[in-house]
Image (cartoon, rainbow, N blue to C red; front, side, top):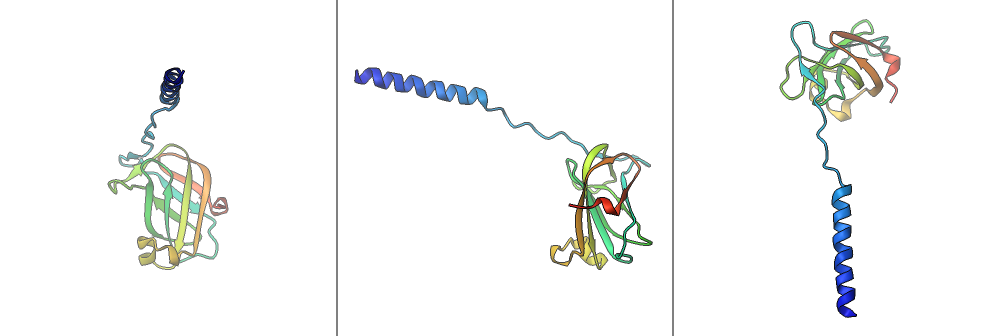
Length: 145
């Protein structure tokens, strides 16, 4: 009887291990969604209708893989154009699809290029923006989250 219980326990253990191996999927790699841009293809996020931040500096990003980033750019007349770069190699980049777009505003160019969290004046995300090659216009009011 003791041997029978041990045998049953071993069979149960093997069955559980087998089911867990079948049920567990191997983690898939995220597809690459940001590409090096040829001339005229670079994605530019143009944020319009910015109020209260003229002469401040903005940085931005798009939730692609790898992450698209834009360095410190001065806000003028309520508008800023954030030229996207590939965060892996700092080359002009483009993306196509729907992505979250981040906008962060600082007082100075130095603070913007350091991306110092403690000196941010504004930091919000626009959800599910249609991003394409070339200039994509996003209203400042879309940055809510």
